[in-house]
Amino acid sequence: ALIMKPQVVFVLGGPGAGKGTQCAKIVEVGDVDNYSYTHLSAGDLLRAERNREGSEFGQLIDSYIKEGNIVPVEITIKLLRKAMEETMQIDEKKFRFLIDGFPRNEDNFKGWTSVMDGKADVKFVLFFDCSNEVCIDRCLERGKSSGRSDDNRESLRKRIQTFLQSTRPIVSLYEKQGKVHTVDASRSVDEVFADVKAILDKEG
Ligand code: UP5
Ligand code: MG
Image 1: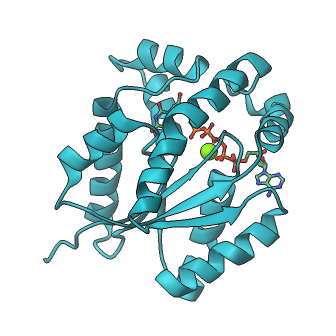
Image 2 (image 1 turned 180 degrees about the horizontal axis):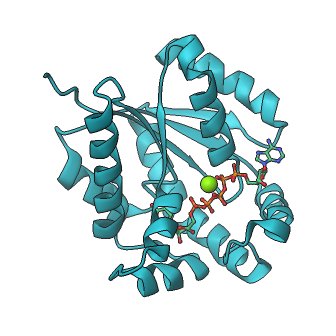
């Protein structure tokens, strides 16, 4: 069978901007409206690898996440590639991916380019723009029940700093390529999704 080249949308935004929430909604409407995306959260994949018995990277991932630092790209790319390949093996029509929370810095960007250039197409970037205050409030609120080791004030301070210093420049880089759709993510889930849906209706 002809294996399609993965079509990728990178989903970026600060901690708590709503990347995961909006990706879940995109997947939900997928069948009805014809864009059937598979959601891959780089953070979720890293947390699963951290928790996997026998993982050689467990300790490293754990400390990086707590400190709000960005895990070396070799590890993240390996997990993303594996997830994409497994998805397409099960169903070859599932070649559209929302890659949530990646690439977060230059190391990620260069790693993706060197490994995936020609193997996957980056269609565009969905950027959820949200003030630091709103981001922090949402994560602290979620922290009451999320069990996430980084939903506390100290980790959040570092996550925000990492976002501004390392991830924002990557968004700018894609902006220069005309590939970014920015959405005001400080509004309600449904208001944000209305914009997201309009973008997807246009871009496919
Ligand atoms: N919520 C969502 N939308 C809302 C809205 N419009 N109005 C009101 N509330 C809203 O949402 C966060 C919370 O806000 C939820 O409680 C939600 O109900 C509510 P969510 O959709 O989870 O936001 P999201 O942007 O996904 O936030 P998340 O915390 O997942 O973002 P991060 O980017 O910080 O976390 P991620 O899991 O991507 O990464 C975690 C860590 O992993 C990183 O800090 C890093 O250490 C590591 N990492 C890497 O090293 N490399 C990678 O490539 C990826 C991650
Ligand atoms: Mg998330």
